[in-house]
Image (cartoon, rainbow, N blue to C red; front, side):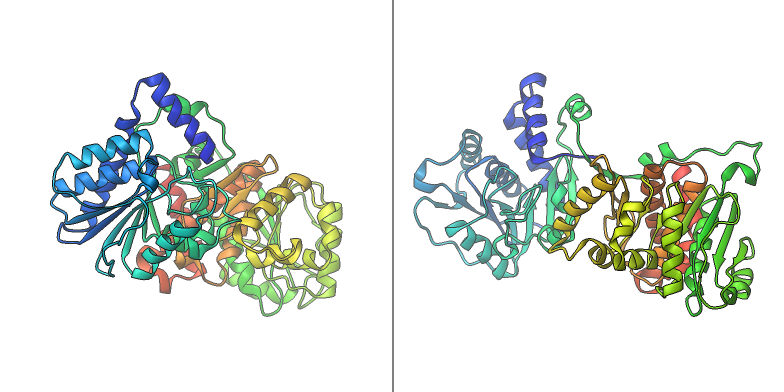
Length: 504
């Protein structure tokens, strides 16, 4: 799914009106019907409801929502902001007239000042004060109103975006001055801001309502942001022919594990094998021989000359892909081995975990990483390499800069893991949940991506599809084990099931 900037959505909206003959009033009614459908599915008409409507088109949406709720039997009070009595947009004015045609509408219209009826924790608030047309952070009376809503403890449903939040970037916005929604019903598309953890407490749970904007305009409008779903990955994965052998699906090398951390090697290996690599070798400290051969008998074991750490990463055979990092530690011998590997291997690799921690201690190594390589840091690992970032938004912007400069693919792990490409495109993932917040989950991901890379998938496809498969495997594991009980071993065991579900 494409994720558009606010400006592009405005253009698609305008194209729909101008070139396809759909009136703005018709679009407003479609929005309202979608929002009311969500409300009716969650709450009964006995729920006291207060609708806050601004003077623009978001306010028009809210006023028609109020009309439909009244018609559905909800006890609804409307608060309309109409500064000086003449600030309403054309569509908002028409929506007000349509609402008032019902007769006996309970409304507080704020022209200069007005007393807003008490708002309690029992209320449902429909927030339609400001949409994505907002240009500056809320201040004055609008800021006070947002805080009033937040402090009431009421359940809040925002139309399109929570009032005070921008649809794209929010570096200028203070969270306390934004309406905190429990639910956000986005119009036609999710907004870029929804995928950043900074905004999670503002957006709440979100859902998209399709209002039938021009399919042609959507297809023809370029974007650099995408939300990856099942069909996107299904188009990438190759159906295996009947006549094939393990030689057709690559030979991956995982450099992983050391004394006390062989579990990371086991989990990465299981992830790689379940993701379909034809042949897998694991290079690790000699002490890991019995562990690997017992836990993952399908993998070949390549022993290091050192008993407890990895001191030499020189590949002994010709591998189609290399993944390095899970559980290798950061001792001097391993650090030197990784530096040599990075400076000598001229094909894309997967770098994770302690490989990233070693790079953080010697940032100049970034200059030597082969273009097309895939880095899979969580927030802490990213910040250790590229400097402390003030927010998830700033971190994403920094990742875009780094990916472009060094021609790398960066997977920023987390909810909606973002795969950032050198061409400036960002792919947010739709799978995964809190069940995956468990030790070793990232090691499984390293194995999956390395496996796909070994099978001949390009770096961009291997990273994006690997993240989706990993998240879906976590979702499958959580179906039986729950958010608390899911382990990384459960995720690894579900990788094959995830691919089967995608290909079905």
